Amino acid sequence: MNLEDRIRVDGHELQLNGVALRTRFIFKVYVAGLYLPARATTAQAAIEGKGPKRIILVMMRDADAEQFVDSIESGMRANNTEAQIAAVKTQIDELKAMIRAVGQSKKGARIVLDYTLSDHGTTLFVDGVAQGRPMAGKAFYQVLLRIWLGDDPVQPDLKEALLGN
Image (cartoon, rainbow, N blue to C red; front, side, top):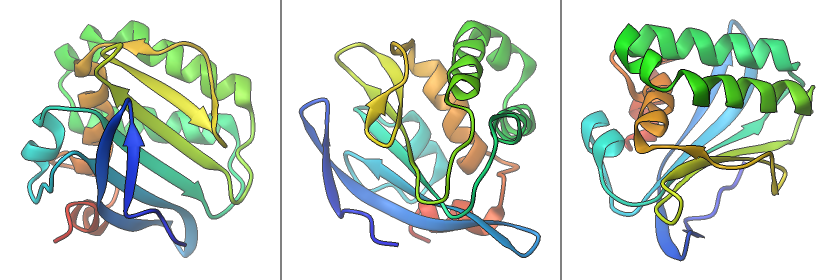
């Protein structure tokens, strides 16, 4: 799975910070890539750093919307406080509705979550097509990034690989 070394988001060049394979039991689920404006080797620098960001998930197997929603909810709850989650509940509900509207993600699908400065929001793209409008706020993107980079990440070696460690 090849991801571009450099991309443009919101008119800014971002560099690939790290690539990781998400597995569940013996199954390959997705390849994740983290793009940032500048190299980050700590979760705090990646999550709190300024500028646009991208997380890309390239599906290695089919997954239905409910599996995806459950996985995201579980990762958010494991890595964010109730207050952090409550502060972005509207955006979480919007994201879940978009995922459910997409339905099943097929093997090879490219799921992208971009945070941009122009709208200070997060846009979900599936195979290059925006799903709905941007979800407001930097805090929401930080809640999302903690799924992979938080203290109890979805997969510890995935966190380390995304941070290039």
